[in-house]
Length: 387
Image 1 (spheres, rainbow, N blue to C red):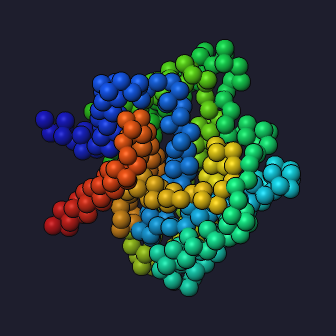
Image 2: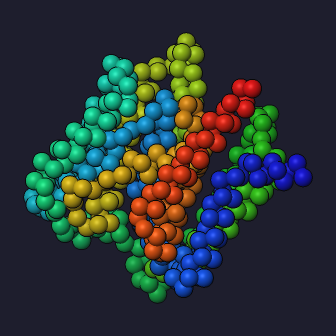
Image 3: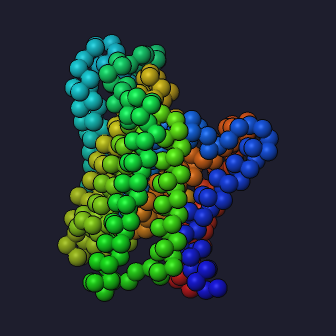
């Protein structure tokens, strides 16, 4: 019984996600609204929530490093998208030059905010709140209040196309890639566990370890089958996988990642240990600006337009995904995998309630309650540990 409780505790978020998906599927089928797990809808969930995952990864590093958030990411998405629209549509610039310019703008915006937060020590809430208004206003000025469309087809194919191009080859190739990913995942987690045991590090119980592997493999195989029965693997999914893998590696296997957790755990202790805390804090916001620019490029491709209202509420989705995914409001705690699961959780809530025809106001109410519950659980667990 104790092992069962340990498994449930360690994998509570995964289990909650599975339960919510099953409940939505039962409700959707019972009300004759189709199915959440139809191949086309599954692909749509990936496309709809790609920006949330990208922004959540960047937001997670801000939360881990200092317990702060970035309220300006939605406005940065609007501004960078506006620049992309003007360059690619109005000026007909080279798309690679436009992409590079957008990414540089994102980095510069992150550096601007990071300077005030890390070196001048103005509270992040104030700086990013000012940025939210500043960059939204700049987006309106760049677009003159108008929406720009359509984007060049050669640009859209980098974010909206599928692999393979031929739908006839989609089933076989997608399944092969899925099986390769499953094999790679098994090898990676086994190597990581054996390496920890060899170095006498603490590892999770074997039963919990196996349970998590089984859940992930079932999710990979199920996702692969759904994609195979539609158009194949979306290119945006490959981009998301690359971002998640890279930042997971940085957080778990690099000196910078360890320093970031140390900064969030106790900034004074980290500084006394030789960590350049100001620079680490600065980098988290530079990184947030960069990922906001990436999210902007994804969004304008998905909507095939650049609008001054783009990005409204994106910061709340990203923050919610991080806290639902287990990040601590106090900093120093959180994982990239948890943020991704939190983003998927938010996406499933949005998609399921939309299919059921639930009013948008009620959708916001439900998401707000879920976010509050996640933070309450985090705060109560911290108090229990201190006691």
